[in-house]
Length: 402
Image 1: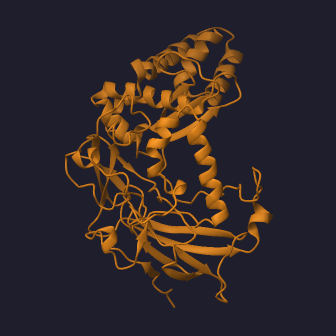
Image 2: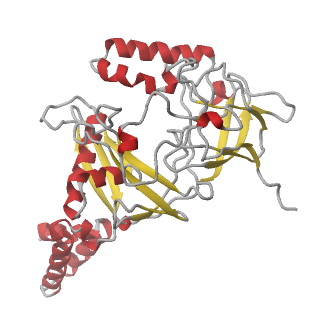
Image 3: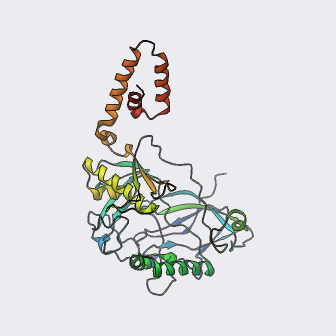
């Protein structure tokens, strides 16, 4: 017998405002918010959601909705849901909740999303000093593929971001969050910026009647997630090692899913912890990653894209950002890898025709070796190098060897 259709526990109407939804939504992490439904562990269930702004971003070419977006009322969340075992006993503090995301995607008739640059005076962003003005790109979906009229020549299969998923905190954990972030706001050299954005941080705020509206969180183009949960009784003590003064100072563990786009060719951009003014920062991975992103933006803007278009693209394309070095004082090293197959330009990875020149040198060097008497050992060494090095670099390696 075929399995039952997954139960819809939180339905939404994307044409309605967050506070008009049939089942209450919220925008705070707080233990006093009551659950809207019970879910039994092992049950396959579906949760629908609206976008994090509550549907205030429009499918059009204007970025005015981004520029003037009220960021004091954001991050709408579906739930909370109470997870119970087969005997109806709910998960409790100290248990581990294993959550499997079985599927996710847009609701029918709502197959679009967006990436945006926020105005410096209204939220800003990671590179706000370089991109102070609001911009927006709309993305449309063709199955698993996404494309944007605002960034032509790009199409890619995506790993959809599941948005914000978490467990409601206990009062003790909520107090830990608020106390440590309050200390940071009072002592950090970035105090002013942190205070300006604290109102946007649901994790840092208590729910108050003002702005505590109903809603749900999602990524840029997410409308529905299919879940299954398991309760591991006492799992925090057994599986999670606290890194901090209390047993609550733990972090979740993630397992990568079986579905992913497959790319074989990448452009990788590097950044170190030296900022744009030339100032050295000590092992600052944020500065290093910022430099890697700026290097990528600068390079890709040479192929007909504006820097704003590249920045919007990097917000959603299947790129890979990594901390590549954190031990070589004083520099942290970050890298940003971008798959070249997402572009319809064949020459986007031929940096100064390096690939062509290397292959030409490779052919010329091979001919030279094969015509040289008693060169069999050298040729064998050449072949070993070819097998152990990236192909585009073989010519240069062989030239050095000769």
